[in-house]
Image (cartoon, rainbow, N blue to C red; front, side, top):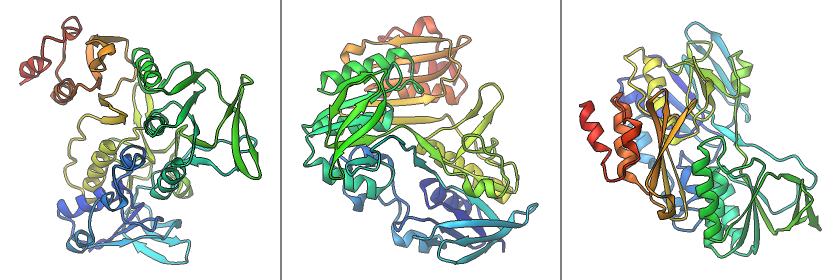
Length: 412
């Protein structure tokens, strides 16, 4: 029986190992990760966990009995530092961990995730500057947040805004610093950016756009302030940096796999060495029109992992489905379905002032994506419409009295 090594005990890694069993795989499966904990949920770290609404004991994806029942050998606290393919055609090889452990395999999957992008500015080594990726990061941040008074969040993306919302809700003086001229610039249209700027300001968060960090100031090794490129100095006893994720590609590069902003995979999760698959935040997918696309979301990681497992077993690849994503910022629940890359038109549905509305994205007259704020019905309807290859004609989309499910029925 062929053995499979899944490097990266992430949510994608666990799903891949699970899917191998669900699809009939009977060979040995080893799931190995560098963290000392079994696979756990990461999205709540910047949301419910940071706000104290969720404990660490509720983060685990599966209990110990699951790994036993599925016959998955889970190895925690072991970083894989080297991988060598002895048979690139079949994908067989050997991996070596930092502790000197050797693991032979017949099939290889990489689900190694990514690391927070760092700021390299004077003073960046000061105590009080935080990055948020794993439980240890979140636990330290949550502890120090209790005593902090002035918090600066660097980066106006999803993680930064979620952390800002949590800190503001805790009664802290919070300032978000974003280098671009609007929030969430890489992910949403200007209409949504302007809404989120206004919404966070209404809740007491200060938003500074078009400026970046020049340096951090401190006293006796502890952070005291943030100097910006426009000359302003912000007092701060805590900084949270959320400026993106850097996919882990070291192992892939050592194997000679193609990497451009992540491990490049095709629609079947195959790398440039087809016998090796990859899934999750470490990957980008080659797109014929928009180049390489990276989707940092749990639903995408889970769907891609299922495809990767099917590819390893040589069975029919399941449909990946429509990508979707969510972000909870205070009481603002954003749900996104589809990909808005290359959109040329947007249609606003509802009134942003009500904080319950949707924005639909179109490309050449075809619906491609939705951003739904506190509008779960719109989100679900559009997600299902996109899954069925349907459309919502733009002239009708702006009427909030017309349920979008009407167009779902038209695709049945």
